[in-house]
Length: 89
Image (tube, rainbow, N blue to C red):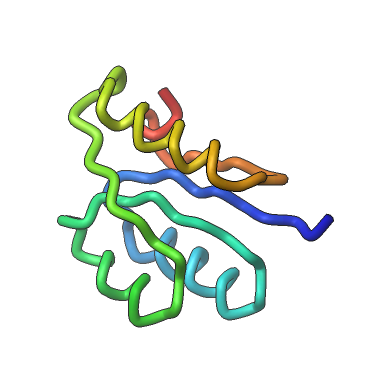
């Protein structure tokens, strides 16, 4: 089985964004859930990252949890990484 990563974040800063884009460019299969209003969201698209919109309204956002649940049902992931408290919760 090939390793696959799911990364969950809110609005990524430049360092996070470069790391994620670099992993995708290196060939790591990954799916990114990120806030589409973040200033680096378009960089993910331009960098070829499989990015999907996720707007978390708080640490216990039922709508956000539902989106994450659907992504987890659709594919198998070896690693799940959350960059910030909202994403982690």
